[in-house]
Image 1 (spheres, one colour):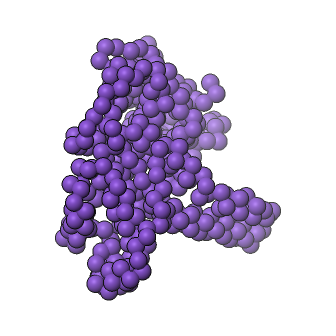
Image 2 (cartoon, rainbow, N blue to C red; image 1 turned 90 degrees about the vertical axis):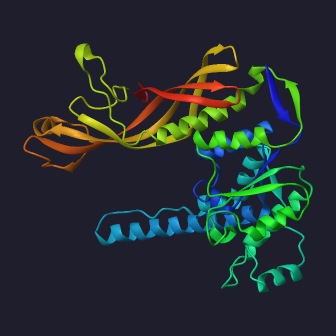
Image 3 (cartoon, rainbow, N blue to C red; image 1 turned 180 degrees about the horizontal axis):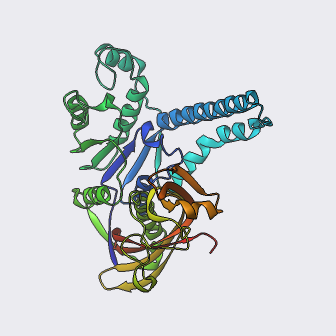
Length: 388
């Protein structure tokens, strides 16, 4: 098939530290999409070295905080006369902290990303920028030094980036934004325009979600004014790209299962409307819905069911997830139910039933339609108890 690639990426995506806070190893659905597009050469993913250093500090602080909380909780148990042996986490925590920066860097570099060096901007320029309260420095305080270094790293990169590039700065930090709205500060926009390279820049709060914002980012990559060249590409050579896109879509779909009802048998044991789950819930539970689902990204698997004309492929994909359900059980049934996973939320919901929760490890299956380089549709197929 024919695939169009830009001779150089026409969309530059630069991420701030907060884009990695909730996912220190870039494993969310949004990150999966961005890494896949970077690997394809569809975007130029850049991460300032300042961001990597800030992430490393935050990672160490969160590790130390979690360890302190564990020690405090163990101390509380001992006060209640609950035997609790001390945990020796020092070596594991030290190893995780020492290796974090290298592990994060490898993830980004493997996907074709670039770590931007500390900018060479003179100290005098930084001082003058601070005194003039020019963003990213804040107007009423001296905060903004590291944010300014992040910005200067991006500006230095843009001086040698392709003409007519579209730049996407990902940050939910208002320090880059205009006071009046959430758009990039006009002063920062002007700095990019002053480079004279016909580059445009936008500020977005978070990485693209799947699938809505994916199409928006892909649209930028297709519509930017850069020269495209044709490459003959065998579809089988794109397996890794398809896998990343499908994984991102499945991760997002799993998280969207919260609030969905579970199908119950109707005539001839055929499932009614809702999610069809095979042997997951105890038969005594009824009117069940999904409270939350936590997918394991590393368990993702898929195979191609069929391929059609027009670069369309139908995939059957699966992923393991910890799923928490809520539902109801008759009081008489609960009295004989020996499943410890049933947790009582309200033992007297009414005269007949109890409101309960139930957790299970489930393998979830989805039908995924991929057209070209995008996931066009994803539908839940069924779920089964892991190990069944």
